[in-house]
Image (cartoon, rainbow, N blue to C red; front, side):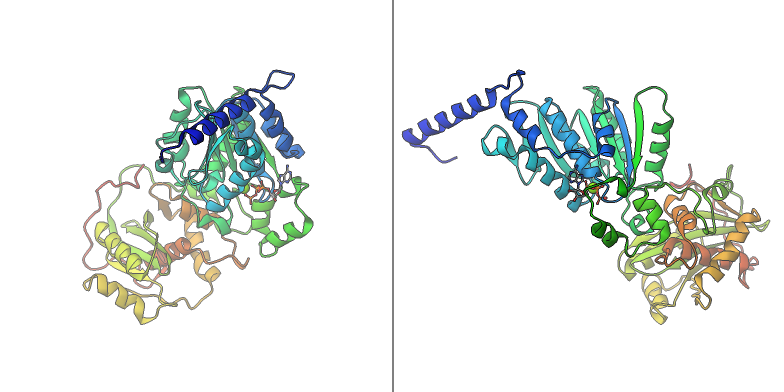
Length: 453
Ligand SMILES: Nc1ncnc2c1ncn2[C@@H]1O[C@H](COP(=O)(O)OP(=O)(O)OP(=O)(O)O)[C@@H](O)[C@H]1O
Ligand SMILES: [Mg+2]
């Protein structure tokens, strides 16, 4: 800190004193006058925001449509809690959402910041009442790790469907124990468009939390839902703009905020998959293959065929990155599960697909496949195998299952990569010309691994 001249030091002392006096000035009801100024600057909440902001429950789950006013709602809630002397932590996975929240909070608190009553740190997204525990902080967080090291008595988790559930279970909930703190979970049901961004283990975790909160009888949890149309501040043009390229399914999820379990027209339902979870020890396999849909977001699915003609889905090793990344991941899966073939689609890479794999490991058996029929024609016979109780999942593969239950043939959805990889693996094992056991059976897989639950 630079040394101050006597005159500067005196000026600084006078400034501090003036700030303290300002901060101490009270309204007739006894609350600090700057609180009243902040309250005046808060937005007028719309009806659906009012109900969840004003509710006194300790655990709130809000499911709402895109642009419905979720972030403005939680910003209002955060500022009010801050005025009540609480320590508020807001977390959201994406930078643009942080900006939205931060803008709202600053907008309300600006006069008090300008007057020096509050301290603001722009890089840390932090505003605090100096010399107190009262503060409001915004962080980008996809998972538990980025939330560690902070504590709060009000935790606001925005875009919760994209976060890893550990953010709450491992760090959030313990953080609130000390002061019996409160938590608010805000989300929009994930559609095909947003699924790729998610760091969730189970893409349905927010929906499950909502369902629990809605059924809670203890008075501790409460759930609310509203559509994008519930926001009267959203212009028709703005709504049209965000919905213009949406399929009707995405519209139901992202605008009408519907958590869809069974999606009309999808080839699988969650209950069909849930009814085909493998329980008990693993059987012997006569074949194991790794299906690959190459690309930046590559689908990589491992499945095995049993001697009695059933298929077990063993792992989802899907990965994002350059060609070497998916090739290395596929080859690693091949060795880990003693597979007898890698089955990559070569429509988009031609010869390069096999060359890329050979570059990683020259000795693996590669059987490239060519998608000559449409996606529906390839996937439909595989879904029939599930209906005939021929395919089981060893563990829960949330993202894969989300694609299976979310993909509606011919509805204009982007290519579901994990589903494609699954279709290649199961077609090879169950429907291909080589579906019968090879002459030399690969060793039995008995090693338990992380996908076993
Ligand atoms: N109470 C309010 N008063 C004035 N404008 C509001 C209010 N609530 C929301 N808005 C406006 O509506 C738009 C959407 O609000 P907000 O960003 O909070 O929605 P969201 O549900 O978080 O959206 P997204 O799904 O994009 O995260 C913004 O332009 C915001 O300024
Ligand atoms: Mg938002």
